[in-house]
Length: 165
Image 1 (cartoon, rainbow, N blue to C red):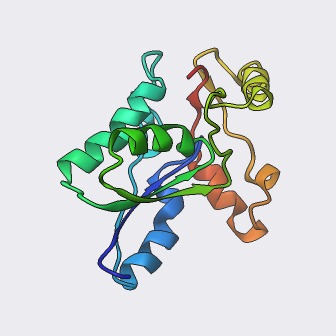
Image 2 (spheres, one colour):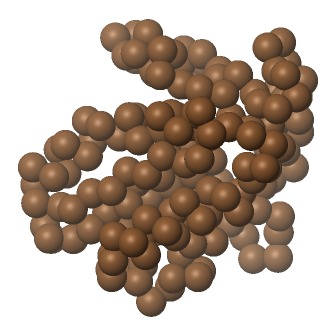
């Protein structure tokens, strides 16, 4: 199976950095791996603005595929990363060989892309302490059961995400 291309899309508050170890292992096994960072997050956190929305993040993924001239690929989306992933897959269905949902809700035909419980949680998070109306601060890694050895690393690299997508 090596010589296959994999595009790994991170979740909320993260960036390409969160796939560093996985990408290295996959590359050593012969896969081509791309780990885009969505606008306003990670090393692109300086671009955070009110104009960022889900369409921006879909364009981030689609543009990577276009400009890297990726013809066939496996598209992986973690949590929030699944929102843009399934829309990119719809638009580029002839190029996507597989979709992987990593700790994410699966889309259901005819239903909203974000379950109401998750929308309610996001609204509550946008009102939480430290929110400035523009962004939602990262939740601590411990809340996601990140192993103790990696918690400080994850907490140090997570960045706020735009509060309304």
